[in-house]
Length: 230
Length: 196
Image (cartoon, rainbow over all chains, first blue to last red; front, side, top):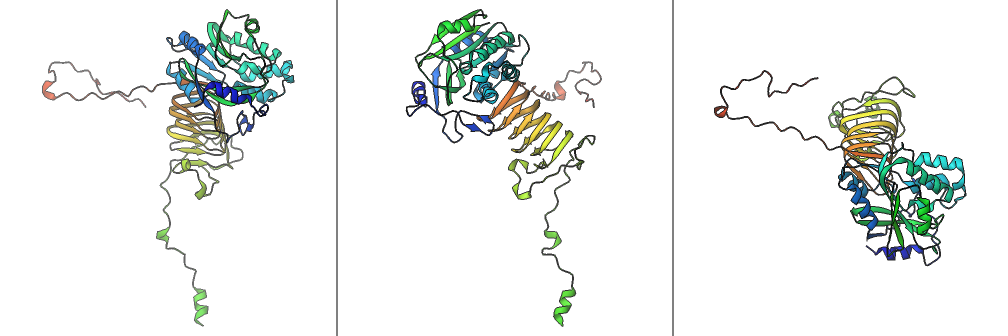
């Protein structure tokens, strides 16, 4: 186990920017298949806040955009909730490619992507684990995705999202987030990607302006955790 | 010419017939709806795999080999290994269904246990458990009691964990001496009727 800070530093790549994610047989993956997985554990105030709203309830419908992992499936379903799983970044890569973000402003492509990744009825979810998946979306696609999220979640539901807070980063690592406890995440590096845009608190408040509230937790690892209330 | 006489004899088998491996006991057939086969195939499971290369999971189960495509409904009363293409529905309610690494299933699936190494597109109901192995792909909704997802597996859909209902424990028969003597006994009480 390495610390999350070291993991982040290593992922920035001191030998030049990391090359794009490799491809696996099932599509685009961030990590070469034989490359050992780098895993770290970290506390998450955002996750704790998210679970504070859903842990005492059961039978909720939760959407996880980070792809299916055993830990998340077990954790959520053990709380008595129904889990929906989408590998958002995989669908993003399959739709638009890994590096090219030009197409992310094409209305037809945006509509296709929304059908692939977020084709759910209105007010379907009681909570969404977005993780860090919104960082890699160009403005047009990002606005369309946030609008769709606003549509498919129930009023008063919560979403958890992560954004890097260092605006000097050229490439940022992206992770698989596995829930260990209500306030602890196991973070496994999947590779590195160039974010389509970087955010500060003000731009994030503006992005989620249609939601009821946005709450920020700034971590020591320069990762901004936010809880969005619909 | 004694050599010529030997040539006239019928060739002897290399091994006596008794040494041949006995055919496996008649396996329960896997009925396949005969309506929409493309092309027409036998109603029994067909394997295109050489015997020595069958995956460990396939041993002792009916097999749809990787060069076989089945379109229709499959009801299996034994474990089933699918390494080919399958469209329709699969039901193996009391048994294990394994989708091999070459298997592609576009079907609704119901089984006691489902192991996915290939691809499933369709809803899956596994009364006991489902395993989605590394590099497997499942797109559909899952209803099961237990789920195992390996890293590197792809899953898109919903997961509904259904806890199995505890089986009713048969009540221990009360000693005859302690049984109340004057209790009215309703016909059928204590003997559940099984409707078929």
